Every structure is written in C-alpha cells, then in structure tokens.
Amino acid sequence: MASGCRDCATCTKSGLGKLVQHTVVGLVYLCTLGIAYVLKRGLRRHCPQCGHLLSRHARRADGSFRD
Image (cartoon, rainbow, N blue to C red; front, top):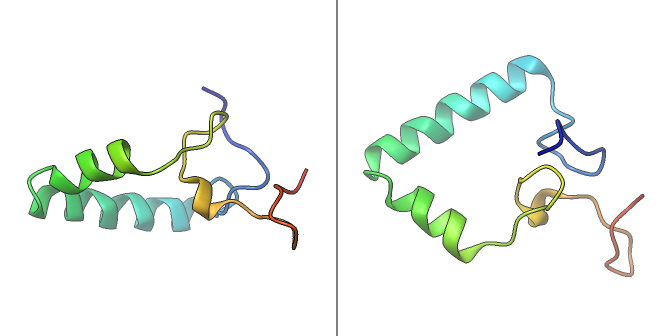
C-alpha cells in the first residue's frame, strides 16, 4: 500500500491531526468491541491507493476525483 495520496483528506492531515484521529477511532472501535471496524471495512468503499474511505477524497464538481 502506498504511503498516501494527495486527494485524501486523511493523508494530507498534519501529524498531530493524524494522531488525534487515530486515537479517537481506536477508542470508538474499543467501545463498540470491533463492530464499527467490521461495518466500516465491509460496507464502505476504500481507495485502492491509500486504503482510506473514498468519501474523504476530494472531487470535482462533476464527481470525478481531482488529479
């Protein structure tokens, strides 16, 4: 998997922002006993380049991804 892509809001966050996000997400997974992780991985579409949610990627007005 690549280290990131430039259209992804998660990949372009600062180091502190990534740390806070990972902490909160880990807490949510812990509180839901992993059910949230299974639902996220099984039901949502992910970027083939970075693995993050496609809904967090920047798009043009016509719906295509920014390059």
